[in-house]
Length: 183
Ligand code: XMP
Ligand code: MG
Image (cartoon, rainbow, N blue to C red; front, side, top):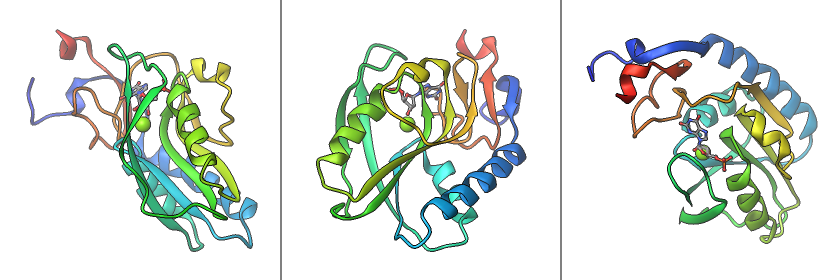
C-alpha cells in the first residue's frame, strides 16, 4: 500500500467534504432550534466521531460543552456484538444535563443501544443522538437517532473519522475502499 496517497485507495467517493459540511449546517440549525433555551452537552464517541464533533460543534452558533467517551465493542471481525467495554469514561456528571450523543456511524445500532442505556442510568435531563451516517441495518435497531446526516448503502466505508485497520480517518471525504486495498 502506498502510504502517501489515500485518495487512490478509494473505489468511490460517496460524500464529499463539502456535502458533509452542508448537511451538518442543516442539522446544526435543527439542533439550535430544538435545544433553544437549554444548556447542551455534546458527547462524542471516540475515535470515529472526532471529525463530526469538530465540524458539528463549530457549525453551532450557540454555546455547547463537549465531552468524550471511548468504547470498544467485542465482536468477531467487522460485525458488532453489542457487548461494549468502556475504555475512557466521561469527565462530566450527567445528572440534569441535556445530552446529545455524537456518533460517526450507526450500523447495527447495538453499540449505541448499550451506550444509551448506560448514559440513561446517570439521570440526564434528556438524551438525543446525532449520527453522521446510518446503514440500513440500523433501521431495525431499537435506538432512535433523531439527527441523521446521510443514509448509506450496506458497504464498508472509510474517511471522515472512519477507519480501516486504523487508517483513512484523516480522509476528508467518505468513500468505499478499492479491492486492491484488501488483497
Ligand atoms: P454498530 O453495528 O454497533 O457499530 O452500530 C457501530 C460502530 O462500528 C463501526 N462501523 C464502521 N466503521 N466503516 C467503519 O470504518 C464502516 O462501514 C462501519 N460500520 C460500523 C463504527 O465504529 C461504529 O461506531
Ligand atoms: Mg463509532
